[in-house]
Length: 229
Length: 404
Image 1 (cartoon, each protein chain N blue to C red):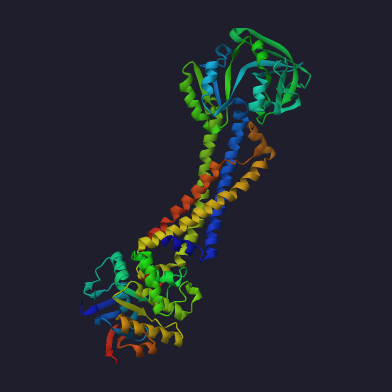
Image 2: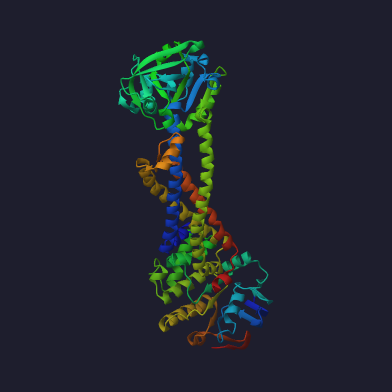
């Protein structure tokens, strides 16, 4: 077992232009197992870019990223897709569920991509949806669910593949207070009871308050890294 | 689940799906109708000149067709008949004596084609009796003739009048006879109407001094589309003593004309397919743009791009097959309507079509082959177009798509 689930070394992302934009600027970062970490900062500070780099969605200009000790920055596009499928769970700001699938099918979807047998994936999807409090909404489609419920399905989907960690980009940004608190409760419980590592980007003070570690970015650099009790 | 997903995706934007479906549906109807009218014209031409008179396949003694001489006539033989009926597609063998003669009325003469026919067989297979528009049909024992309406009009003859025939018979015997006109027949082909004279076979054999002989046999088919194959087989079966001619050989002019016109038709159809293809392509492009973000998310969460591309390819194939299938059935009543109610051509076109020996109407064909062919072509076209999104999606980067 590696000491760090995520490790970024001298990570930079430059968008070339008339004036080069250093979205992420020489960042070193280590995330340990079981962490519940929020990355905060003003708009344009590089939060989403950092998450995209860590999630293998984007490629760094320089530096390297290791997930559980595996280099990911030099994997091919197709290897990265497979890597994400097996090691990383994603929760997006706009939920991004597959609109034509039910909550159960959305949760099963990732396991289907992993070629897990039908009975096994259905059982796990039901368990996960029960865990996020949607045991009675198994056969509802996203349009029949509230924003908070959809985001809970997204969390269940992110956990379905038993990932090394979950990346959540502004997960509460589109939710009302009650839904946001519900979601945070669920994620905090999963972190505490099941040891799932969560890494969020957020502006939301409610998320920041619940995080055990808060990393602040400004102009692509880490300006503070605080552990909270 | 990929197929399930593809199917459900089709129905989540019903408007887009219906637009694509309608484009394919209309494309199939349009292309089928175009092809059906074209093939209908060919069928009409073939039927007018081949099916109802010349025969899909003819059997003569070797050399007859080139010389058109009664000296090259053949005996009516049981062996030949037996060989013909070995082919289940052949349901009739009609003996004929065909020769030229000068036909004269009181004041006028015209070169014409005298055809000795078996009235019973011609009525059964060629419906010659139904072509009688004035007077009555022939009987075996008659010593009378039927005239084509064009010839009757030219010679100013009507039922009950007398016609005189002068020609050359078997081995240069003189052939002369005087016959009452028993009836007037009308053919779709004006060319035939202007030159044909029918008389009972026995009378023709007597006129041309060739008892027991015929100039050839006309084969009738229960499956005309198999006639070419049967002709090829009969050539082998009957040997060098006989010549077996498919209509594309004994009526080369018509066969070549259809072949050329069909090629021109395909050029036109190709243009139509291009228009159809652009219509389908634009709806697929629209779909790709609308769902770009979603595709990015699917790749981000771990869906392999090949699988995603296959899903979208599946969507296009499903909708193409569905549209083509519905279009195929939608085209049938349209084509059937124009088959039962052919479009009448204007006076100018009428003259032109008559030159080709056919009726002056545009009658669509209802040959099932056309419907299946056009549905398959349009479905294949749409499937071919689906390669574009397939390629695009196999190259899509999640981050680029999610930023859109």
